Length: 174
Image 1 (cartoon, rainbow, N blue to C red):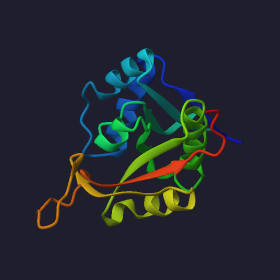
Image 2 (cartoon, rainbow, N blue to C red):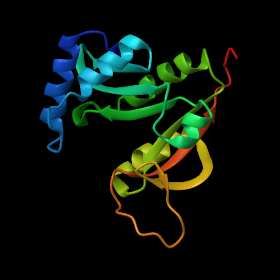
Image 3 (cartoon, helix red, strand yellow):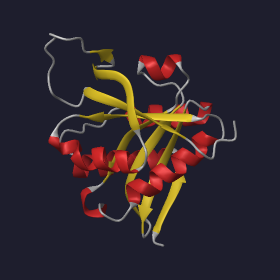
Image 4 (cartoon, rainbow, N blue to C red):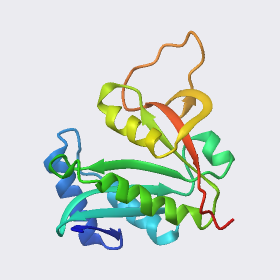
């Protein structure tokens, strides 16, 4: 299969991520985000997987051992975060490959894994994929900037408005 993955492990990969994100996403501006990801990989707070399609960087995703979402943090639920597959590499099961590996990594230390998903149409494919993979609502409603949205509140519908889901890892070693 032409799809392979590697863990983020060096600054050349950081530069490649910055370059590819800049190419495909007009909203992306180079910052120290991918450098911080590398640092967090080195100290064990995060696992960043890079996906390659025939040796061309096709996307990436992260496993955060300490989520910014309070419910996951309080319950020690690692979070799959920031899944990105670049447009011309989509529909090749790359996202599923990233998820398979991140779930396998998480299953070595935990029974549950979680993720957040946006609520507008751009997230439709992700919403369907997560449900097909066995993720279910965590039961805590929607969050905006990782804070619970209470009835009657007004929030902006953007990438910070999320619904969080969890999945039981059946092959957990715990």
